[in-house]
Length: 250
Ligand code: ADP
Ligand code: MG
Ligand code: MG
Image (cartoon, rainbow, N blue to C red; front, top):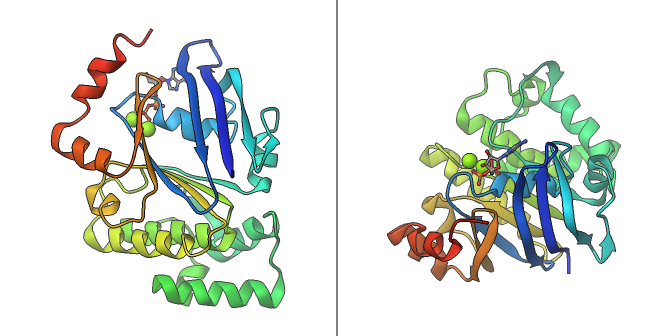
């Protein structure tokens, strides 16, 4: 097992319960999809995996490569190889994309330096069809949607975390950006060592990815686990069946 959450309940720091007793296991080599209506708790789950200080675990535990990391800080979890990508990437004027990647990779679980860094960077630039010039630009400042997507995938592939969580980073993308994202994810899935959790409702993405398991989150509870047939069902009927099942959420 790569990631395992057991009886995992999360509340906001001011004690509003958000997630209730989740159980979920992601094995090495697997890609899981998390779907659910707006407000179900998907982002809370994603960011709590990296111990976002806005939330606290009220019950249960989290294991990464069999190690109990329940008490570990964001920093330490990131260093162990958990990566979270957000909906809105940050703009950082004054920091070039190159320096950002360099610093990020230096702090990674397996740091890449000097020639190896450069070599890997060149390979990934090629895969993503990114020009060298981008590296000199300030991080995300004035980047188009497609460019941001390329940068996000570049970051994912350079850091090469063991576990990547992508939280609706595919909303509002045009066809080109969707293709870039698919390229990046496919490349990431090449090894059997990595795990992925994709939070998404974008059928253009979901229909074209290798997906092992799908989880449906409604009102802070996982109400169904299955295969990609669940994606088709939701695409056709929405979450009604699952919402009825979830009751009032208490
Ligand atoms: P989703 O990503 O599925 O749309 P979220 O995880 O963003 O859902 O939110 C789940 C629920 O938790 C929502 O009702 C939201 O208002 C609430 N919530 C999220 N963050 C906090 C917080 N820091 N404090 C209080 N409530 C929060
Ligand atoms: Mg939302
Ligand atoms: Mg969300």
